Amino acid sequence: MKKALFFLFFPLFIFGQSYSLYDPQTLYELPGSLYDVDSLKTLKITFYDPNYNQTLDASYYNNPDFRLPAQVLLDSIHLDSVAIRYKGNSTYTKCNSSIKKPYNIDFNDIVSGQKLMGKKKMKLSNSWFDPTFLKELMASRIYKRYLPSYEVNLMRVFTQGTYTGLYSNQEAINKQFLEKHFGEKDGVLIKCDPINMALYSPNLQYLGADTSLYYNSYELKSNHGWEQLMELTDVLNNTPSNIESILNVDRVLWYFAVNQSLLNHDSYNVTMIHNYYLYKSEDGLFQIIPWDLSESFINAFWGSFPNTNNDPYQIQANSPLVDALLNNPLYRKTYTAHLKTIANESLDTTWYSSEISSLQSLAYNSVISDTEKGYSDQDFYTNVYQPSSLNQWTTAAPFLPVIEDRRTYLLNHAEISMSSPSINNLSVQEDKVMVEVANANNVELMATISTYNSNFQSIPMLDNGTSGDLVSGDGIYTASLPWSYGGNQVKFYIRAQNNEALSLLPQRAEYEFYEYNMPLGVEESSLASNYIVSPNPTNLFVKIQGEVFENTNYGIYSLMGKLLKSGLISPSQKRIDFSGLPNNLYLLKLNNQTYKILKN
Image (tube, rainbow, N blue to C red):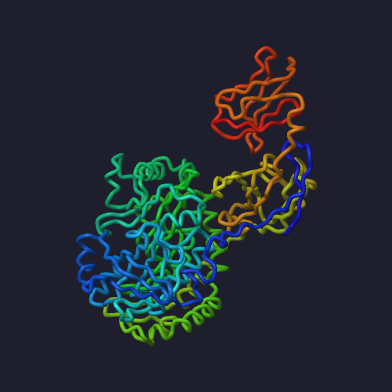
């Protein structure tokens, strides 16, 4: 860990500080959890209704929310009265004659508060089109490197005492998932999967001001949100220049980049626009959460083999989100940087080969015993290297060749291979962030104090020998630390551009970034030696108690240090008006003294 010194924004004291890399991987499950990829748990399901299959088959079409009660045993953990229904689209319809149906299990539906290993829901996919059983699991491990994503592992399943087969155990996108990744769970959550793919699409087109027009394309999972969805589509289609006011743009760019890198054809920006969630967190921004990654690495296809040279910049018809982002030069360069990062660090066939070998050893006996899997035992191994014909219509793409071909194509793509800036030797000295950058004509410190790790603001970094920069033209760029006063946790990363390309430090920004834990501020004795400022908080103005002269000046600053308002205080009124400012925390400077004022 590197050490640094910070000044308060209004330099009164010097505090020793350090910065560290924020690691979002700590949000994911620990070994031994329900989603531990290195263990193979056994789930036994016993329905109280012996005709469960006939009942659930009928309700799948006629009453899809209907669930049957059952009891489950996970290794040694027993739960009574859980609620189960079938789930899935083609993974259900194509296996209709098999007992190996995909399950949606709710432990909390009948018995409020009941959980299995801390989880209220379990979703089991039958891997009907994946002879390796691993494509969704491995895709999940890649997605979660770059944005909040659900976890997956393998699980043995018995139903009514009979071995049903090996399943893919998927984490549910629900309030538990939201709390885990965002620290809150009461925002707008929307599942973007239409009731009929042939007739409707969750493509984020603006359909009009009537919220009912969106009901067939989207499924509302929170108790409100249709108006917010309509507002998102309105901005996206009609005023895309305002997109950052309603969308976490970088989170979506990462989602787009992983979709294209892994050739996940069931995703917004590859082939079939569906299988994703939208969540509007408490910072007021929507973001995309990936879902159902089973078609990653191409996986199952009908007809001729899909092209691994799929252009990641191709804009499909009726995809306004892709159109808005990839036609913006800055967003496009950021997306390109993300593609390059993923290709370099997450398309390594040596790593995949090792992980696949280990997981297949773990699952071998369970796969061989699975008589309902829909393909041969040999396909379990051969599909890692070559296509497997599942039936007369469907073929499973080979795992490793798709990865190798995709990496080669991306890294040789004319736009992705453009020369990008290099960023090295980050350091902080006193109140300055300094970094060595080459091959760039624009360098920025991107910083925020948002508890939601969003709304990063750009601060220019200079190499001109002024504003704290020591030597002009030495390749060392400098910027003053923002929010270095007030006890805030400051989060930042570096963005460097030239005319062709862009680079980030850390490379996984904004999902990763550097953190500063700032000092709480100046002791009260030094804050208010001459004046008492009240009320605080205020909703209109603050009064000044103490001797005020004709030339007593004030300034109201944002926590970023931007001067918002200034003037002279009238000795007769002794007050400062905050009424025209939004509700927020401000810094009030009276002559050479500084106060924190909360406007609410």
